[in-house]
Every structure is written in structure tokens, then in C-alpha cells.
Length: 341
Image (cartoon, rainbow, N blue to C red):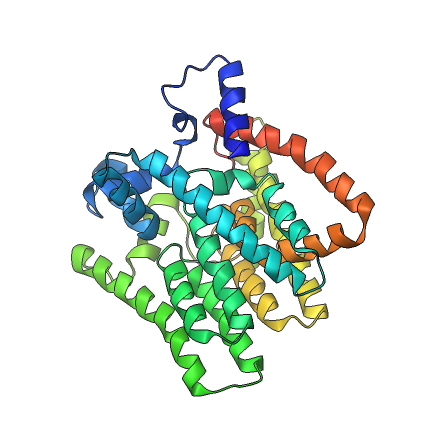
């Protein structure tokens, strides 16, 4: 909420007259979710491709419409509540590898990526489901883990990557029983059910993948091609200028690679699987897209950073000194309507 207030203040200082507090956050993906909330998966114009978005966030917005709330306002309320729940789970997860819970949470909410869990998008909701799913799986409470993973899979496609990590956790668990594996079928059933629904209204089982290619030009390619394409877009995306967007995309991919290696060295195999599979998916697309946003969902990154902030006071001050002004810049760009990945 503090980030939202800061963004609102910046917006007003820049001379923009907002008719409502949440208006400045109503950019990009919130429009897609709002269209689904109002009319379902049968959009017009550009919104004919709204099948690229999973239903959970739009369903909450639809509930908001029932009681007279604008979709963007509902989305921000959901993001605020979900973000708070996710931060608590992240603190517990961070403590499991030696961090103080507060620093794991601060690492997450003080980063510039906090803009994505403030906006009426799906990141905060997915994080709440996914982080708690992981926590319950660590406690051996597989039914809670499965139900929450299913909810995460109803929110974002990243639920597939979460399921891969949970599968590895089950494999390394002390009581590896088929009975405890059964709950992990729930996310699979959700994904199959969602695909079946999209097929019923579009006639395509691969609807999600198809619209990614048709609307955004994203197809499966080898990692080298994806990297080369992304590198070239630094110079070609806007002719005559250097695109900081794709510099950020490549830097974020490099960061995820480093985190994956660290997790492997620490023998945190489930976390390494979750992060590693996510990296593979992001770096085998035609070009890098929204990788900095995805950092928000990779709780092992923030767990590791929480450990560093716990152990080294100078790291705390350096991190905050760098992240706070950078966050302010990101907010200015976002409320100004610029795509910040």
C-alpha cells in the first residue's frame, strides 16, 4: 500500500489529474483481466486474445463487479491482501534456510519488482498460493500443498513450474508414499480443465500457446536463438536508441541462472527445479519477455537474499540504498504508462 501511495504522489506531482486512487495502476494486463471479468473469454478486437490469461484474477474482478467495484480497484485490493499473505509465507520459507523471517519478506517487498505485486495483475495472487503451497509441502501437508498449487495453476501458467518443483520435493521427502503424491494431481486437473474449457469455446486444445504466437509472436526456439534475438532487440526494438527493456530482460535471465546454480550447490533440489524449469521456459521463447516480472514469483531468490541480509549488515544498507530509488524510478515509469516488463 505504501508503494501505491508513493506512486499516487508521484503521479500528482507530475501534473496528472487522477479521478481515482487506483486509476494510475490500471495499465496493461489489468485491462485484459477486466475484459474477461466483464464478458468472459469471448473478447472483441485485441481482446480476442484474452485467452492468454488465466481465470483467477478475472474471477475476483467479476466478484467485485457484483458489489459495484471497478475491476482495477478489486485487483488492487486482491493484490494487497494476497501480497501480505505471500510475504508471511516467504518469511517462513526464508527462516527454513537460516534467514530471519523479516529479512526474507523485506527482500521481496523492497525490490523494484514490488510494482508488479501492487498493480491489479496476477503476480501477488499467484505468489500467495504458490508460496504457501511450498510451505505446506515442506511440512509434509500434501493436501494443503496440492490444493494451493491447484489455485496457483488457476492463476498463472507458472503453476506448471511450481508443480515440477513440488514433484521433486515429494521424491526427496522422508515419507515418499503414493498417497501423498495424489494431491499433486489437482494442479494437473486444473490445467486440463482450463484447456478443455478453452477448447470448448475456441476449438483449439493448444489455445494458450497459439495466442502467444499470434498476438505476441512468441514460439518455441532454442536458447541460443532466443538470446541472440533478445540481444538484437536492444538495438533494433526502437531504431536509433538502446532499449533498456531488453537489457533488463537479459540481466534478469542471467540472475535466474546464477540463482539456479547456487541452489544446486546448496543441494536445494526442489527449489532448483522450480527456478531452473522457469528459466528454461523463459529462455526458449522467440525473445525474452517479462523475465524481470517473473523474479517476483521465484521465492528461492528472495530466500537467498534474505539470508544475505540477515548475515551481513552492510548488505542490508547497500540493498536498501540501491533498491529504494530504483523502485521510485520504476513507479514513475509504470504510472506514466510505460511497459516495464
